Length: 307
Image (cartoon, rainbow, N blue to C red; front, side, top):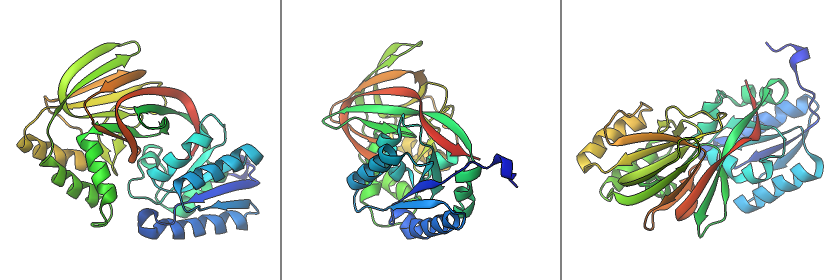
């Protein structure tokens, strides 16, 4: 139990919700959070706008207008991504209540999938700063990301999964991946790594994943050694493999196991540029335009509350 002396003084919080997250689970979780905070005498501003753009602007207004003691995000990684722009570098702590499909950032930070316990972090959580990634794709506005940005096969899987209504939950990614394997043709990439281990890589690859954290897609371990506070991005490149080999890699990835395969290469960089013909990109599971793109780490850019 947290001692009273360890509890932060909290007067005002903004609770941001995507009511559709987690098959509607976010709506119930938000109710629990608001009731818990209100009962403790905290003034709660609720934000559940009908679009990502409006949600982002409403969070920006709250953060710049009154600087709440915390912004509570009730949803998944997509909602976190939506509000990163007004929160990055603001110093306003982000409290996560995982209620989405993937919840990879919450998993990385050790936050329980229980609304009441997650809400308690607003008062008793440790204040911590973590890195963010900054993505600059062609034909798309720059965007922050907290977990993983990717291009190639995994980006196509994410985009397909986002279009699917069934099945629900994490299995949707598996079905989308199986469907995309038929189109899993490697394309030529040129990757230029910046930082202490600068290098230029030219290769045919199925996918390139850039991780600030270890997992994406609800626990798929794509960048197993990534750390969200080391000032570096982890880069995983899956080279050209046959359809059969891809079918062998996919179950391990889906089960959250480390991929041990000669076609998989891993690097670390402070920044990188990635060029490939027409390949789509995603970040935190959200569409992020097409290549070419530049990615860089922004150290200590986000303040979070953790157990």
